[in-house]
Image (cartoon, rainbow, N blue to C red; front, side, top):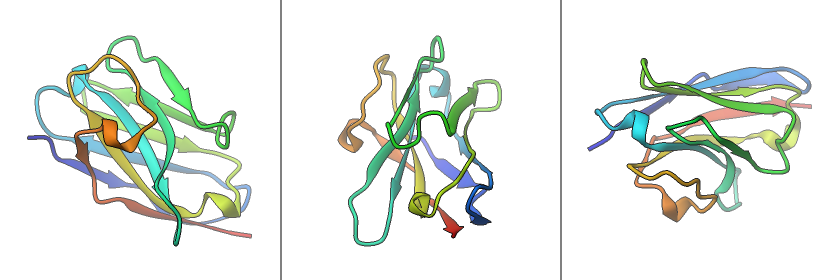
Length: 125
C-alpha cells in the first residue's frame, strides 16, 4: 500500500510561482513512475506531468511545457512540481499519483495505482 500526501497549494497572482510537493510512503517509490494531474471545476482530470523512477525521464502536457518542472528526490520519497508563470487557467485541484513498479509513463489517469487527496491551486488574474 502506498500513501501520497500533497502540499504547497494556495492562492497566487497570475505570473507568480508555486512549488507543490508530494510525499510518498512505502518502499517502492524509487521504482514507481510519479505523475501530477489536475482537475478544474466542471472539467475532467487532466495530465500535467510525470517522471520515471529510474533515469528521471519527464513528460509534460503541452499546456504547461516550459513553465512547469517535475522532479523527484528518491531519498526523501518526494516528488515536486515547480510551477512558474502561472495563469488563471492553471487554477485546479492538483493531485499526485503513483504508477507502481512500472518503467513507462502514462498520460492516462487509469494507468496510476495510487492517488493523493489533492491540493488546491488558485491563480488570480
